[in-house]
Amino acid sequence: MRFFIDTANVEDIKKAHKMGILDGVTTNPSLVAKEGVDFHTRLREICEIVGDVSVSAEVIALDAEGMIREGKELAQIAPNITVKVPMTPAGLEAVAALSKENITTNVTLIFNPNQALLAARAGATYVSPFLGRLDDIGQDGMGLVETIAQIFVIHDIPTQIIAASVRNPVHVTNAALAGADIATIPLNVIESLTQHPLTTQGIERFLADWEKAQQ
Ligand code: E4P
Image: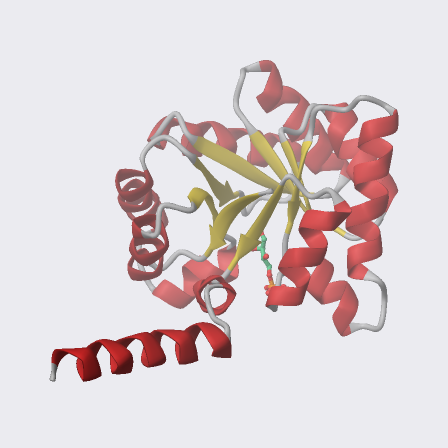
């Protein structure tokens, strides 16, 4: 499983990129709005930081024509922009049209397996099941990721699964076990993956022993 970062914040993206673990970035309108910056300018900045890995940028239009127009505009910003489209009939139409033009797409707001299967058949490069939001309402987010992964294996579907709405380290481990190709994760969760109390304690003890030996 690969790691994307789920943010539009350039400082967070720089930190994750420096760790050498970053294979992509996902943004959404809420994340961009939080930054209070021009969307296209911010996308250019992000692409400069991360190089040629996938950077998902979401359309705002709800009709197919508008989504296709916005998607083409976004794709002009950099060749690695992936157009993020919500899971609706119009979204599927947009994915079909954009993928015919070799523009990569990420179908977002996936909450059941049929939505993922439809998105894949329309030609989506990625599907994003939101596991945290399902957990929030007492449904099985990880079960959804697992079911989609099984369906894609059975039917030899190349669309990649991005486990999205990831909230904690347990989500990350289980998404990897469930067969997600990618997990898109906020920086605080990425950082928490590096931590274990015994790691911290071990570093402290090694340093203390080192200091003692110097005296
Ligand atoms: C994914 O592409 C979305 O941006 C994201 O994971 C949504 O997460 P949230 O449910 O924490 O807002």
